[in-house]
Image (tube, rainbow, N blue to C red; front, top):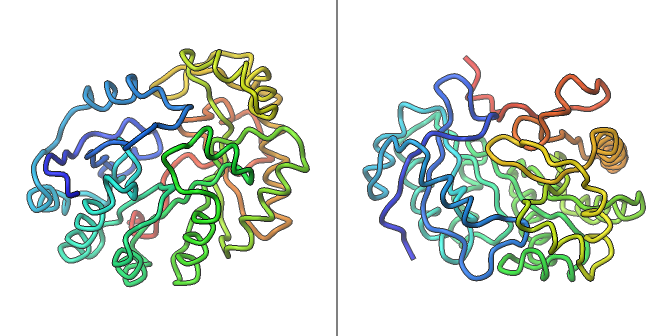
Length: 296
């Protein structure tokens, strides 16, 4: 289903504030049950309040994009969800036809249309593609991300995209594993897809969802939520998070393990974990979206 009311908005994300800025392109929403860690009302209200640069159909929106270095597609809902993936495909197709340097950025936990695989492969040097998989346990995925692809489908999509030459970035987000053996299981699983880069961030729990998580029947979720004892400002929202010392320890352990499997990891610090900036010299931090086309 192609969305008709597409909007270019100023990005609320600190990592997008680079030369010329990287706006967000908002359309559609999540279909079905939203992810349990998402405060949907706050999320929707937040995007409604962002300054709108332009709105219209695909043609008029892409006409406005030539002045930008790139854009983040569909933060209001997964770009490749069944509800949004036709719009995403048509947006990408027109963007690639119209501009030569523009770089679309996508983060997904779903499966693109068949024709989108080919389109992405043909433009593999001009896309930033993040793929989310936070758990090796199907119970976790079905419980916490109920409208997203199952683990087997995600791994196959990551494998297919990687093998077509696309530099897929694994988003290990939101991570809840406190035990080393759990992190190793997850990293070993993802390493089979050919992915060589990851961005990690632990779960940040909205205040409205805290009771749900601290009383959850899955022990790893319950234990992690109870370890999140600090209520902090994270970019545009507040959430319950791990204390700084535990955050650093978890991030260092994940980085070490992923490195052992040939996956280089950065920790999301611009928006989700700003406390890490200046607090550690042992971690590679992601504070800005990166692509060669963004360099002068």
